[in-house]
Length: 472
Image (cartoon, rainbow, N blue to C red; front, side, top):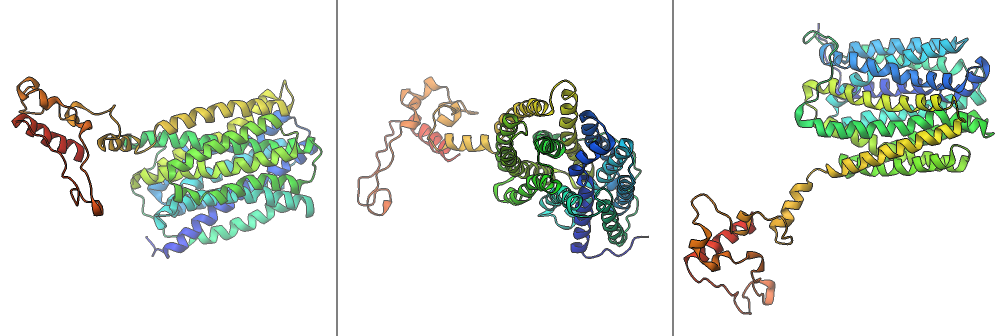
């Protein structure tokens, strides 16, 4: 039975709330990882694997459950994600060893991977003009709030490894009540896991957006997974400070995302990639050893992340067919999650034979090379570039890309060969003398009339061809 739909604004707020709460839960443990490492006695590789488990699990969850939103509707999918989020918080609150943390991160990956596509579809259905911007902003806002809340509570509140997750359980309970008021949806077909199919007309847009978003989350993933440990080893043991540095990355991202709608998706991605490149260079040079340089790199990375990630989401949202929006959005966020998790694993593997700071610098250099390559590809695929180039040619300011027909010298259907039209018909039209102007700027107003020379029928035909070519 289909219930009466609530007001669109309430549905939008519900989708935003669930997305924010689940991302807060996914990033609550970030500033706590050094404490878990000290208490449970695991190494750097285990720490990075614990962090990356979230991304490695959320990616297949997106593939499996992304199309489910298009079949059963957002309500059922969001309720399942809230259950998984509650399981994750319970596992962290009761953790007594690293396996508990791995299980908790896996449950967080299932929760957010399940909810991402459904919440984005719900938001886009009820706020079409701003849907992509709202969804991406909510996702990043939760990512920023998670480490800040976790760090502050761990430093200044009792039970630092329990209280944050109990509060998160309460927030999830309120989210359950809101999601339960959404309308049910009659199943529209049979759900089955499928490989995402990107329509042929948007593959280039999707490819550039996926690569840009992957790298944006690669940079942020480096900061979120490694900066707490790097600062801890540099003598900065205040968890509130560590959480604030992590939060600064995402706060800057939230602040720059409104520029996406002003600049356009493609231009925002280009600027974002440039900022990401600068931040990676700073991180590679500092290796986390300097708190000041690390903070500057974090702020720059956040600004670049907001533009690159927001532009990528907006570009795909604008071109995705409505009937496939859930599956395509899931495929896009698959690239985002892989970008957030893969660098942490790479750093952990390198750290087996090198210091953590050195491993971070090496991965930052490799990521900078990929950012530069993606920037060049994205710039070469600028939308409207060929149209603007053609317009410059037609206006007569460029002489290198005229076709022969545009010059008036080519053969059109039914046109006579050049040798039958006379020598004067082959005269280049780009040397045509501009009409003189007089008072008022009108041709012939108070001045001599433009010189027009027609020496025969062939010249008249050429003149007509020239006028048609310039107008086109």
